[in-house]
Length: 272
Length: 289
Image (cartoon, each protein chain N blue to C red):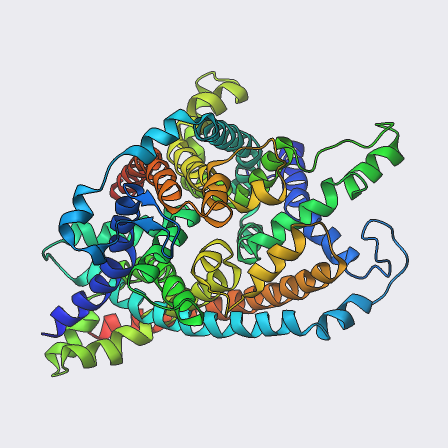
């Protein structure tokens, strides 16, 4: 049953080749000495040097990171609250509307989200810039955070919270001292997801950024519209490298933590 | 009191930054274009009376009179349906092989499918520009192998858009199907084979029906975003590739016709409501099961 047939081996080989070859080729060509991106002229790190001297890219990268840190932090707080309301909130007026508003942004075309937010910002006379991008990113990524966190809350043993309340905790303390440490891995992965979504976003940022703020994806998009560029290859390689290291580290850490936490939770439940 | 704050804060945020903006889009889709900033009339500043009396459906009428929009919706639907079908054909064998792989490989295989999702979408689409162009890697390899005599034109055609959509959305197809196949009890297939099914029959009669929910979820996860896709058609597609996301973008940024852009968005949303509702039903059924 678990023996890999030739069919399964072929499917996996071609499948993963299809997923990874384009990125591997991109990485290889980022070390190409030639300005002509399609002609191989020997190994060189020249484009990485050019990239580091390009102030426009560095500025955009800085704006992007600022936006991503701030918006993912807001999104994590709001998304965790929303998840708590969805899973533990019980019944309240407009609950269906609330859960609809959590799930709808996940499948909404970005062009529509971007357009509608821009029209709102102009309607209320808010100047477009870093702040409007942060507001926009917080709104769509809080929904992703709340989906991640609520899937953890659903499996979480409620009697632990009740035990804390019985022992005299206020409900806020019970959340802070019992619930939060247990759902922390989900909250952290929610933050990471929000952070990468914000880093990647081109469409919504294009609508909500004013002339004063340019993010890296906007910069990359306007550069590659005209064709392949060796500097963008170098930039892409750096971004792929950071993500790869980040995801692998996160996977290892969460695996270890979730094992430990499950054990603790079970032990605590036995005692309670 | 605490509970009230807990509900009110995210609720208010979503109302203000998700729901109200849609109401505004809807409102502006019923307004007239004006040469000002914001470039539409009437605005709410004129008061409610003139605001509502001046609203009309002429932007929607305009959409039906110009071929471009009609063709763009039809072609977006065609591209989204076709690429969902191709993604399913490519994704199903991968998910199937993952579910059949030795237990100790599965976590790694899962991570390998998820990893591209964390990598910038824009960069993954851009990677294909260097592969598909006239002097690109693919043409060089094919010429070298002697498969073709002259370079193929793939970049800036609809074919490139299909490749781009299948590539970027493949993980969304693989993961739900894998989840469904992973839960599938192998004994059922053995039972079917014992009862005289051939392996192929067992696959069609047992495996496929039991992974139906995964297939449906994966297809919606590809179809819904593909329909409104902007980045892929604008980087990989050519002038002949009409997609509604791109039309909306150009209407807004190039023609600066906000009322028409809003009308385009409203219709796109109406088209999407049905698949979104079907998708959520499917998810709920799965959760209950």
